[in-house]
Length: 573
Image 1: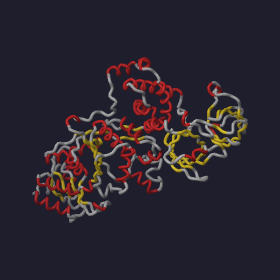
Image 2: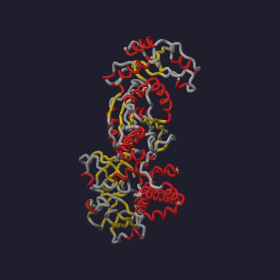
Image 3: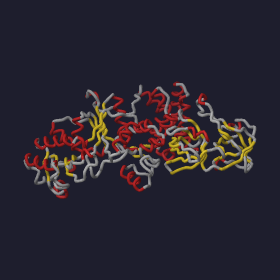
Image 4: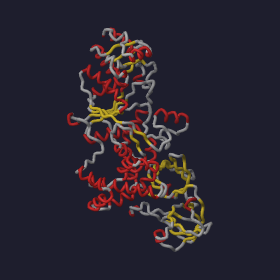
């Protein structure tokens, strides 16, 4: 990042932090600033991994100011923002907009409706993050309904049911009830029979292409006016498994001349020859389409508010015909745009990820290169950080970009205080060292003296990263150890004090002992990194988080004995 860009980031961050702190009468948070900063300044995005590191010290400086000093500084930087602050008055901490007509209902009842065709990718997290947050705001009720009524095109993955529930738990939420739509076919059949008797549905055996042509011309098919008794009998033959796929469907009778052809006499049930993978549903062949199944369940579970993609606006209109036939009141609907995620080469698609795993290009759903919640979890990224970043996107109908730097900034605030420090050297260069102490004792955590120090034996030589090796005759400060001068082949300890860092600009570098260090394999989004770490890391356990100084945060994944590498997963800088 060049100096001009750094200055622009610092100024924008300071303005945002001052506004945020004054608005909420509390300390500004890096995580809360990253999303708006990236949204308002698209030119920052390609430097996402560096931005948080620039923003963090700015936020610290802002938080150290008094309220009056913050106000004066904001007036100086951006008088318009200060005026906006006055206009807003007391701010609401709530990031999400109020749900429409929430007060009109005794309780807010919402639903998650995952398709269990695979574990969740990062984009799937937006729904539980937002709905779970609304549940907390309104002290509401949340259903998790697995929409698994497509045994063929979006065939359920038997492992995905539990994987999705685990993901919801990881994000910090718990459904009040969990159901599988494939357990509820008899309920859907009963409502289909009722709909036929009300004149709202009919069986149709037109070939798909033939009906498509009629629909496009706003012409009714010859089956549309058949009597309810005939449609009921033919529907029962579908339920009984007497029809094959494509032979017959049940259609909802709408307006065959509707200006939107997608709403004309849409399919409610079809026959699927492929058995459902769940044993309890394997014998069924007549399956509801999602618009029918979802509409019935939303009413029966008394859902008051639905959050769905803007691309599903036609679903609400199709389902409206059902609600009119049954005399029901349709839930409130909030539509939002798609979420796109940066930083990944792998598509944000369950089927694409599954294909890459099957080909062996990814190790599994928790491969660090995969844009999945299982991967984030294994990397040591907290579910709360994902929720924070997702809710900051709001529920706009426009497509939005999720910058991973927003997730990382939120996670950094959550884990920094509890993460011990450690040294990791990648592609180390061995340099003999002489004249200094026999061991270094850097702090376990720079902000917590009570945690003590790490005892790192130096030995006869150290490993440093090639880029940290100074020019011949120059000095560096081996962090936690002290100053050394490089003679072109070795380090010699000097009697300089810390002022050489502050005043002479001597670089502070990390290192590990050449002989006593341990091998480390660090899995990252860009592939595996090999290095060596200080020996005390052998005392850690899986799931512990550490910050490799000058490298980044990592989760300990496996601690083998002997010389087998310790395995870590890189979280973020």
